[in-house]
Image (cartoon, rainbow, N blue to C red; front, side, top):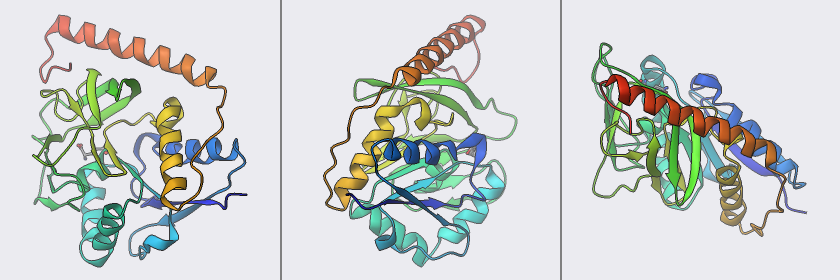
Length: 259
Ligand code: GLN
């Protein structure tokens, strides 16, 4: 019997915009459907981070004000420990505002630049509150399969020479609405702008994270197949909706044009 998978949930009470907590629910439920117990460990402002206590890390998104509090909490030993754990292969999923803070730096709409963890070689700049936000349904090609979600961010993220995108934008804005990239991947860490929440509608990514967590601690990463017909039906609707939005926006010549 595989022992419980331990998910470290970073800042659950601070970074939880657009229902990003749904990602935790999807991970827990798809593990339980295979008879694998999951323990969720909240790690918030002021809490220590100990890599040996978690098998998988998750952090959601939120606005600039909360990001400022989190950036301060990540500065110093806590952020160093998280970066070292990811360097050692700890799987992680970080969404939107957390994704931005796992990059090199984030320049918010107002106020000083925030230092990032430097997990991803990306930089993010918010062009200002009067500039079109990247908002809408989004579809991303992730290694030949499609990820569906919803994005709502002002910041534009640009990949550095050592960064690899999570995927390519099929419909929507993605990292910056210009270069066709979405998110970033480094070792077993996934950064993305996809809210939705992401994982309930993307069972392949959920299972990939569970496999990585099992593998990371030396367990058999094989997962029994599940009936994903409900998720697939939801995905078809989400893909059609995103494509219709892109078509409509192309017709009206929206600025910060999505792909
Ligand atoms: N404050 C950041 C931005 O606007 C992140 C927003 C979010 O997490 N949805 O880009």
